[in-house]
Image (tube, rainbow, N blue to C red; front, top):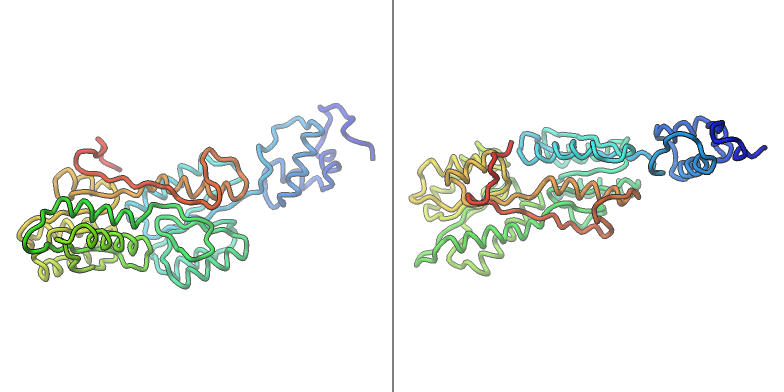
Length: 354
């Protein structure tokens, strides 16, 4: 066959590129128009041939195949999940065209629902907030065996084959809450009590926050006693009712730590007037409600886990894994360094969060 390279550049066709790359014209069309369903090796050969021949058209900027990412988040009514879903949408507009983001928003966060969503076909990678549960472990193991990496976000699932975790150090967050609570609560002849509210400790994030709080109280705040852990399921009404019962059992409560998302329930229970003195209240996430609660004194501090930075880190990990160039510094072993920010009344943003 005559070498098509001898043709003037203006007359080079996709058939010429196909001949030099050793593929069909339809394959060349799929590569140049980024239609997917082509292996990385074939894509590289086609683009190399097009460049060698001087094909006059804009070529894809990389030789990557199309990567489809399924982002799985549960209970989108929670402000944290809303922030994270919005950030994934914003980031999807800035990514390479060969990366597509699909957001799966689940009504329930049961291991069964999340594992079913993780196992759906048609995706090359998964980003998920999941409980630390044997069913989730098994699903991650199956996906890893299929070459479909999993990045956990918000809450980790350690001791699995997941590719990486994108999130804060929850143990340090819990220790920080206990540190400030201990410093803000004066030692007295009788110890004060701390009531903890959480979703449930099946999520590693909540378990680690409570472990951090407990470790710090034992180490540096002997005048505070962990009285009770209340499991409110991140439901404000359930949390309110259970906290009211806890306050009646523990009228010496001087501090409340909410490791989850039921902040409205905490404030409602505090305003019921069951406790003789307003307790210190430390919770999580900067939302419109916590912003207002910090301003009016209902809340003492909130620990924000920087969900926008979690999204960026999770995507940078996957882009690095699939060989894309990134502006970040994600590289194996993909250790998350996402910081948390502690807000009090004096360092709040001027504008209330949306």
